[in-house]
Image (cartoon, rainbow, N blue to C red; front, top):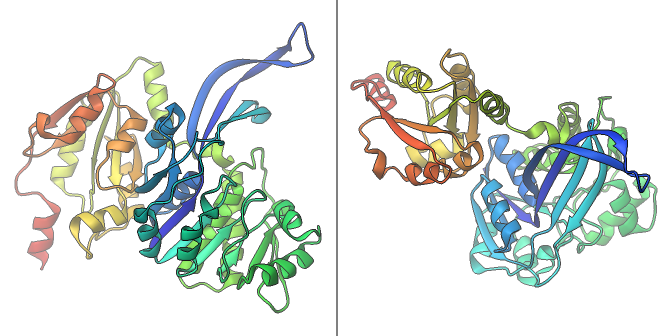
Length: 425
């Protein structure tokens, strides 16, 4: 299933620290900064979530060529088809103790997004589309809207954005958005009115801790939400939209898809929301770096684990103080190895790798090559096993940007997944 997420991409920045005093000249808290973390936001966050769910996803969006746009490009680790736009919106949250003290927004104005033929082709090639509107103008483009009427779409609207195109499978406003569009704060009334006005097959109004209300033309369906602690609700709407899109694309009925998505959003909040989305390898890497240690990374499909893999991973781990394995997603393996691979799915491959003493963490990437994930991990040493020359590897130039180096460890002949599978055949 080929999913396209189309919409406005943002740059989100969290600046975290502690507050122990107030300003001497104003009743404002003083944040002693301890950390700054940037991530892809908006439609780019939704695409990231879909990729982490193992979906074959492409982001169709528009980015600027300014500093914020370049920074955002480095944070997006899914395949992209991009047009150009004015300055990328940057949302900066000041946070302490798991709570936001303030948010500073900049950018987002200027030239309207440019929609290219390549972007339209990518949307038309999708099996399913999530339209992730953040009110920055991309989904107002008439050519893009025309194309979106020809593919199955879930539409996640924004109060500053346009109405969904006619015929969407599901529109997913939250209650404030539904109120803004319909003029009524009653969820059932709003869902009924918007379904008719938008000519949508179904409308679901999400209600936060109260769950969601789905209207598909008959009796509305109320879906309760599990009770979970939620200190940071940021990103819950995107998590819901991605989950419900994936369920519908796989053939689920709307009420089942919404129930699953409500549960998925609740689990996301229980795990810390977007603040909990930082890949565990980053935590491992940060801890090793704080101790002055050496971070080692390697990558591959690791489909059928064999002695050659085990020996290579042990050799890589011996070069430093932690080893992070960059693992090709199921879709990436399929593109590289063919429709009958992988033999073992992504979850199984992660479980087996993490069980090895030599492996400290695993991070999954959805592209064919690991350049983007390397840019986020920034390892001191990148390891490849096999008959390679370091200078010929594209990753060598990438890790050199921050002073890293590439090392090739011995290749153990007679051990390969392809050979194992051919013997079984």
